[in-house]
Amino acid sequence: MHRAGATTSRRHHEVAPYREVAPYREVAPHRAGATTSRRRGAHGATASDPQSSLGGLMLGPPDVVASSQTVAVGVTVVATLVVVGLAAAVAWMLHEAAALRRVAADLRAEAADVHSRLEAVAAHAERELQRVERELQRVEDLVGSAESISEVVGSASRLASTAMATPVIKVVALGSGAARAGRRLRRQRGGR
Image (cartoon, rainbow, N blue to C red; front, side, top):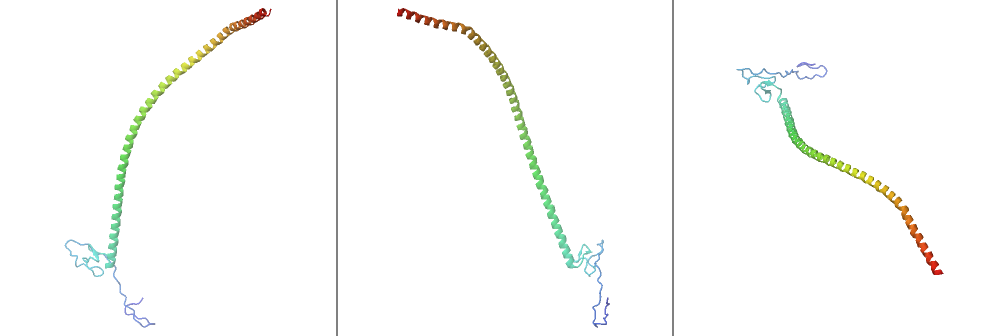
């Protein structure tokens, strides 16, 4: 490295003097009774210079300070928008939850009404079913009675037909025989 005022042997030209730049440093915070207008930073700016300090602290050259402040403002705006968005989302969700609670209460009331009506219908249906069962039992009894009457009538008609068939047949046979005999007698009288 070359020092200030040094020359190179080969090229015979002068190199610009090397100058060290002091790093940025913080200025001590404001103490009671002290003035901040005379405090100077690494580049000679006073602490009251709005471009180079914030509350007595040196932040850097004016262009770095402006960009860091812009970034800080941008981050603050984005964070504020995120918080406002989250608050709006929470408010919307609370509104929807309240609406769901109202719908659930309405459904509960409607379900209770339907349940009470169904209980009344089920009780009525049970009473009707019992009445129908009693009627069916009566019909079964009547059918049983009709079957027994039918059996009695059937056996009585068989008995009557058996009892009546023989004499009727005999009477018919007697009538038929008498008619034949009467014709023969007439023929014999008329043929003589």
